Image (tube, rainbow, N blue to C red; front, side, top):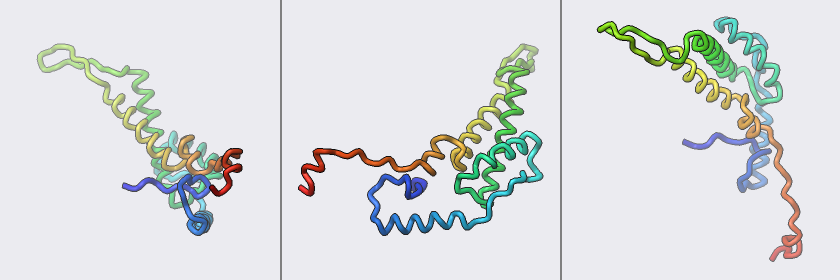
Length: 159
């Protein structure tokens, strides 16, 4: 599977000027898409809608469009699942005690803890895809650092 493509401004590979110009033209076309809706989808629950309304204004500087709305909604939905499961685990604990068929107490992992850990994993995965983590934002918008001048390279010139 190929790596996700970086924006030309943060690409560190050896790319020709023609390829850089081509990529920049393609990247400019990202702004031609319809912007993402400021209103959350109806099917989200209240917690997910609140998260949608919180993150959408923060994403205005990212190249996000209406095509990405499903990913943003998924992030918010998983976030809501995480919050709900986390609250349940806080009340009930990470393990629960059940009585087995012989009448003995048996401790097992709270199913809500499993939901919480899976939702947390999905939140991290989807957040990285839509620019909500520091790593993903750095890949998208970090400027190239100018190479420090090397006095020895200048002395050698083209040798």
